[in-house]
Image 1 (tube, one colour):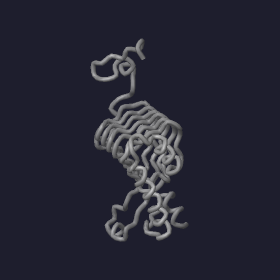
Image 2 (cartoon, helix red, strand yellow):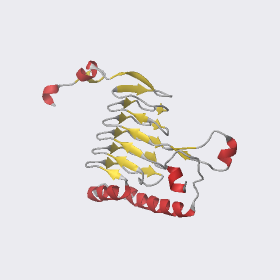
Image 3 (tube, rainbow, N blue to C red):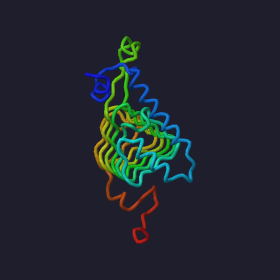
Image 4 (spheres, rainbow, N blue to C red):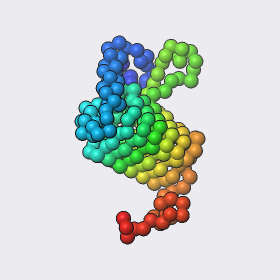
Length: 203
């Protein structure tokens, strides 16, 4: 199994292959350029994302600065994905994000991990596991998602949560470690925030 296969298989590997590191630096250099764009350069930003990412659908928007180990090379966005300031996507392997998903500021999506055994960490071993965030999710400010996690459609993850295991669809989940608080229900059809009612006639 070569280096690239190990990156995407979950195998332990040493992330110091010179040829691969040179390729990674090219991706990071392009990400640097993206982060230096001006707010009025919306078309340029969109074109750069299409070039940098593995996949990016229509209507996606990322607020710089954005951080990614491979500059987005292994990130797959559906359509109308929004990432607020300081998104950090550790894309050493693939990150999949469904349509209409939104990320608050300072969200971290990590695919890379290091062994618990000290002797292996001393040798700089690493492994990667993909992350999947399905359609129409909302991850609040400061959420951390660790390698190998899947989050189901429509799920809301509360600010500051640390997601260490899969979350089902259609729930509100919070905490460290993150746990399901409740299902999305009829109350949410009537109230959008605390005692604030949804006026469906105006929407």
